[in-house]
Image (cartoon, rainbow, N blue to C red; front, side, top):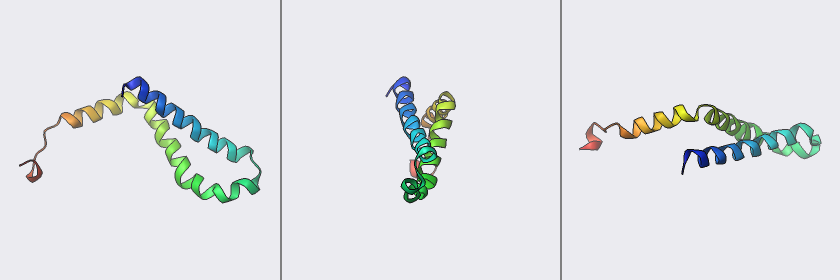
Length: 78
């Protein structure tokens, strides 16, 4: 997957999660009360992760590629 396609996919996920948070703000409380647990445990952390990924995508890509090039050492490599 190209960096551009990756960024587009992460951006779409981030926008969808943001819409979920927006729905909580503007929807009636009776509709949202059953979903508050999932929102706090799943949606908000994923929103933070996707936001940081969009913000630091180039740095994360360099980190992953440098870790992939590093030779493995130890008993598992033998």
